[in-house]
Image (cartoon, rainbow, N blue to C red; front, side, top):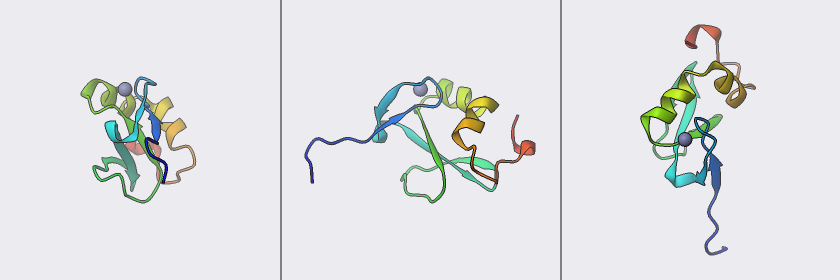
Length: 81
Ligand SMILES: [Zn+2]
């Protein structure tokens, strides 16, 4: 195991790149976006800064959501703002 290797993820809200553990993982479950605090849930996840501004920006932006979950069939138009 390599020491000092940190997985980097991009925040979908602001585009900042940060170590995975500094970001919140959001998973799409039955058409709803939920938090995955343990970062272990199945399914397509997206990462976001743990602050409300970024989270709101991500959750309320249909374009970003589509991009993040474009292959997910559970993302229905009705659940999006
Ligand atoms: Zn952010």
